[in-house]
Amino acid sequence: MRSGWLTTGPRAAAFEREFAEFVGGADGEVEAVAVNSATAGLHLALEAAGVGPGDEVVVPTWTFTATAEVVRYLGATPVVVDVDRATLNLTASGLEAAITDRTAAVIPVHFAGLPVEPAVRRLAHERGLRVVEDAAHSFPAHDGRTAVGAGDSLATVFSFYATKTITTGEGGMVVTRDPDVAKRVRTMRLHGISRDVFDRYRSTAPSWHYDVVAPGYKYNLTDPAAAMGRVQLRRADAMRKRREQIATRYTEALAGLPLDLPPVGEDGTQHAWHLYVVRLRDDAPVDRTAFIEQMASRGVGCSVHFIPLHLQPYWRDSLELRPEQLPVATAEFERVVSLPAFSSMTDAQVERVVETVATVLR
Ligand SMILES: *Cc1c(COP(=O)(O)O)cnc(C)c1O
Image (cartoon, rainbow, N blue to C red; front, side, top):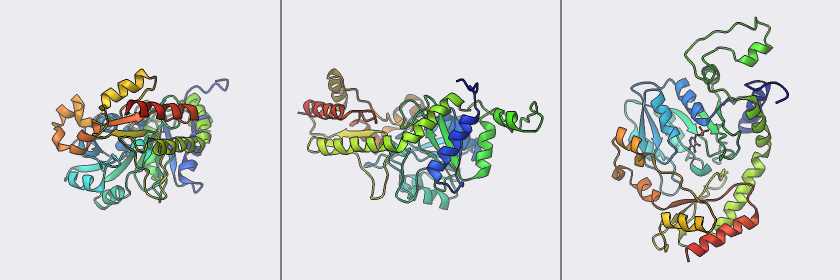
C-alpha cells in the first residue's frame, strides 16, 4: 500500500514471473498473465483462440457455470458433455462423441484438483481443436508427465478466488507457451491497449502515448492482490501437502462407511486436493440432503460441487438438455458431498469431521 502502486504494477509483473517459473520451470518457455478472475482468464484465452459466433466449444457438465458462460460471451455455443463416473472429469471418448464440423475448442476441467486424462489433450490436438484448460481447482497439480499448465494446451487458466488453493481474494492467471496468445491476453485484459500502465511508466517512449488496437476488457490484477499472491505462491506446496495429508486421513478413516471415496489418480499423479468429495452409497441411512443437514446441525459445514450445468435452468433451457442425455452426472449429483478440507485445518478438526460423518451414517 505504501508503494503507491494500487493498480497493476511491479508486483503483478513479479507475480507473473514467479508463477510462470513455478508451473513451467526455469526454462522461460511458459508465460503467465495475471487477471482479476479465472472467469476473465477463460474469456480472454478463448478470445485469443479466435472462438466466435458459429463455433462450438465442448465443456463438461460437471463444472461451475463460469466454464460455459465465457463461451456465450464470445457468441459461441457450449456443447455440454457427460463425465467419467470415477473421476467426474471429461473423457476422451466423451469429447470424441461431441465433435462436429463446428467444434473449435474444448475446456477440460480438472475437477477437485485431479488432472484430466492426457488422452483428452491428445485427441483434441489430433482433431485440430484448441484446448483451454480450466485449472481453477488444480494448483499445484501434475498428471504424471506434465504439471498442469506446463503442457501443450493453448492456455491454462488458474483461479485465486477466496476458496481456491491459493488466493488473492479475487484473481486468476492465464498460462501459455504461445507468445502470441500471451500478447493478445495482455492487450485484451486492459482495454485493448498495446502497452500497460506500468510499461508506460517505465518506458523511455513518451509516457502519454498508447495505442488502442481492439475493444478490450478491464480484467487486470491489482498490485495489492498480486502481493498477496506472491506470499501464497511460496506456501503453495506446503499447503497442498497439508491438504493431501487431510485427504489421506479421510480416506483411511472413512473406509468401511457406506461411502464411495474419491479417486487419487494413477502413480505419479499429483492431486491438488482442492476438494474432498465423497458419495453416499445406496446403503447409507440418509440421503445427501439429509446428510448435509445433519452434519450442519452438528456444526460441520459441507457443500456440493457441482450442481451439473444441465440441471441449471439457464443451460437446461437454452441448450435444451434433458437429464437422460447426461446419465452419469445426473445420477452422481444426487449423492455427492464435499467435506471440509483446507490447509489450516487442525488434526483435531479433521478427527471431528470423521467422527461426525461416522455418527450421521451410523
Ligand atoms: C471457481 C471456478 C471458476 C471461476 O473462478 P473465478 O476466479 O471465481 O472467476 C471457474 N471454473 C471452476 C471449475 C471453478 O471452480
